[in-house]
Amino acid sequence: MDFNFTEHEREEAWTWLHEQLENYYKNPKGVQAAPTLDIHSIQQHVGRFSFDHALPVQGALEHVLDGMRQYTVHTPHPGYYGLYNPRPAFPGILADTITATFNPQLAAWSHAPFANEVENYLIRQFGVKFGFPKERIDGVFTSGGAEANLTALLTAINHRHPDYGTSGLRGLDKQPILYCSEESHHSVAKAAKNMGLGSHNVRSIPTNSNFQMRADLLEENLAADLKNGLDPFLIVATAGTTGTGVMDPLKEIGSLAAKRNLWFHVDAAYGGAIALVEKYSHLLNGLEQADSITFDAHKWLSNPMSTSLYITRHKDILSRTFGMDTDYMPKEGAHMAITDPYAHSIQWSRRFIGLRLYLSLLIFGWRGYEKVITHQVQMGQRLKELLLEDHWKVYNDTDLPVLCFGKPEFETDDKLALQVCSTVLASGKAWISVYRAGAVNGLRACITNYDTQEEDLKELVETLRQAQPFQD
Ligand SMILES: *Cc1c(COP(=O)(O)O)cnc(C)c1O
Image (tube, rainbow, N blue to C red):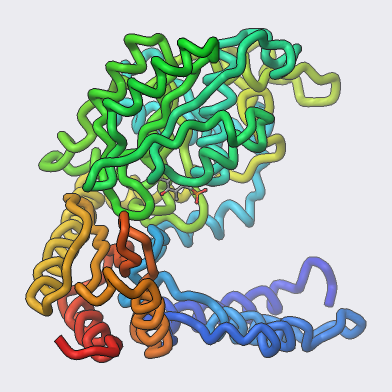
């Protein structure tokens, strides 16, 4: 096969692949929601061909699609009630095709000015939606919420200690400490490990009975650390926790951060999307006080993996944190009022990930998103009703469509949730997970799929009924 393919070969490949993908997309129930995890047969499938002999194009594609169909948890399946992974909306799929074809390099502004300005425009638009003053907004697209959270830690420490970039942590005279809740995403603690802060210097603040950070205990911890000569520098609150979908008390925590002059980061990876629904945007009151925000468009905005934003109200902090001078990077933009992303973020070579979000917004508009997010909230409420009717107990209280639930039997037997969960997965009809909500090892279901309908919810509740190994 010639590297370029002939026009005819390309046409054939596109046509065949298009038909296959269309069949998958229009009939997501044609596959089992979750695969059987038989590592031996999966590795056998992957290693079926050595690369000593080239395959015909269609044979290669068929082999890959077989693997994807058989050995993937299918987030486009309406029975996928997962960890915020969406059914990708179609504009994002088109966007990735365009991006891969043009292959813009976003590291230097002048190499991809359209793409860079699209991302800058989106950062400003979302900054405004989240309540930041328009003229102060800056930010960057990241490979995921984890990178956005790491960016938050790095900007917070550089804000506190302008010498951090040159002298490093060892150059500081006091130990910096960060605060988050025990329900915050583990990427925060991971970022602390990776930046050299050390996970011992992350205070995991206990939560109340609804899994929200306790501001009173936060204040106590802060006071104790200050008294002991430590250097609190950052509070991370979560808007839409990963496990239970609740909002930390943003207003209270934000005021505390302001009072103590600490950086206030809000991890709104999932919950930030509710800002697009007028009726519920009050749930994010206090978000506007943040110094920086993490937001994932590959969660509730149904973009393909993975499209994240780090947004800040400190216009110069990213350049101060990540700035570099090089001889070899393009200089065509040097005289313009632009920033080169390589000197403005963790990454260097950059993919045009913002196109998924841009194209989705061009095609659906804010209203399209408002409608679909509202539908998912309603499906969450409906699922709660159906579970309660079927004598399940719901452990969390949130307006977001995330449900942690179980039966009274779960409270005394940790294994029951796992057992029910694996029976549900084996049915092929749904994907749910196990989550320890406080003292109880329970089940967790989230409406992540924009196309999940009431009949799917009923099927889930029926599947759950059949999966429980005891009678009510
Ligand atoms: C998913 C999630 C993250 C991690 O984001 P990735 O995009 O998976 O890297 C961080 N914080 C919260 C609250 C999340 O739900």
